[in-house]
Image (cartoon, rainbow, N blue to C red; front, top):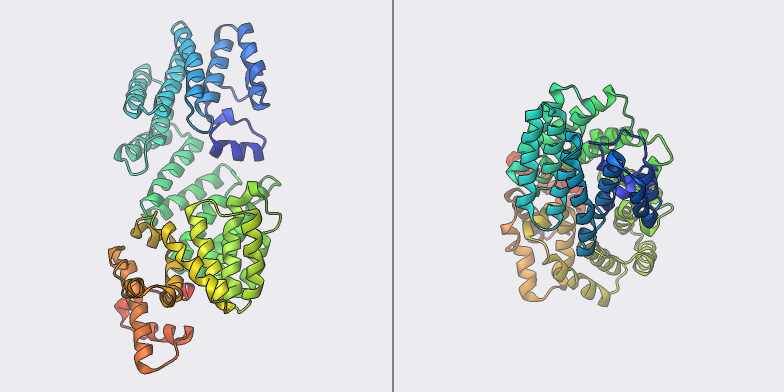
Amino acid sequence: MDSAIRIPCRVYELSPLLAYNEGYSDGKPSAGSLLLDAGRLAEARALLSKQRQEARLRLLLELGSYYVFKPGAEKADLDQASTFINEAISLSKKAPLQWKVESMALRAHWLDQSGLAAESQNVFDELVTLCNRSGNVSASARLLLRAGEILHYGEPERLKKFEKALAIFRKTKAKDKEIETLSLINIDYFVAKKYDVAENYLRTIVKLQAQINFRHQQYPYDALSWLAYRKGALTDALSYSNKSLASLASRADSTFISYFYTRRGLVYERLLKLDEALTWYDKGLDNKTPATRLFWYRALIGKVLTLNEIGRAKEALPLLNEAKRYYPPTTYFDKMHFAFLLGKTYDNLKKTVSPKATTRSFWPWQKNFRWNIFMTNFRQHFFRFLPFTAPLAKPGKRESILSGEKAIRLHSIFWRRTIIIIICSKLIQWRGVTWTRSTTLDLVMSLPTRCSVMTSGNELKSYW
């Protein structure tokens, strides 16, 4: 199954098929789904010869789903899926309408996985029309969700389909499906960086989930904490972080607890309460494993940065060496951070050879990102990186970094923030004052109001 489905299902001991069989399952596991969940694929296929009518249709769809939603898009898997889907479509002609709908919907997913996105959407559109004509508006709404989910973020039709589904779920008072749809819409606004809109959706989601006594509120609360953190509303960020941690009610919830501990550490770091930040980063690094790397790696980055900030770079180096040995960075994002952290640590330890090698290795990885994406997502490290890299860079590169020639292609607000910091550094140099954190912050706070709006004091503190 899709790894994004498999991970939480494994943690909460649920069948991954639950994500795909809503249209025909009664919520109880079938003989076939039990075999598939146990990894006994050959036995599940052998069972097919003993099944008849709707029981056979269900197993065909379960086997087809197993192969269609298996991680990756291997041709052999899709060929296997096609065999089961085609038989299900043939048998569904003499079965109730729901089986035709579910068989063809799985066919639409197969087409999308096969690279035939337009054909996939055409099948979904035909099924929505069929369900509307038959008066099954709930099935129509579920199909709109499925069709929208496989469209790329930013495609106009994606949100349109979600909005249509939302209207139906609200009309039929299907609150759980309303929450699901709002969550999908919310993610689209996050991706589009329309954070104010996303925040409003998150508040609605929290309210609706409370109404149905859904206790897993840690995820929307964590997102609200991040939004408050981003705006510099650190009291609100801490409050939402508290609510997020309070929502962890089971052992299974605690599988992802490093993620929420790290959020708390980031808030305390931004409040300049660095000892408290280290405490929460340490909690986030407890019981780290390769399987949970996604949830604790940011805690490692935060701890190394904080140790460097408080003059304990000697303690940061063993952490980096351990990470490099047992958990080497694999993505461009992690490789960039690791190069930056290693260079910064060596620099603070007054080791002059390694900083040049490590920081220069940052640039080839950075080139994999457009500058506006790099600045938007890594802006804290961009500003931390500037003064550190400039003395190490070749003359041509140094002027490019410090003058902001590359940064001018970024979002205007971040470009103005860069200008403010560079101006401050130049003013300090002209006055013959040592460039320190406090003098830089004092100068920025004394800039005209319209400049201080661009860069809040709290946000600037997080950069330096």
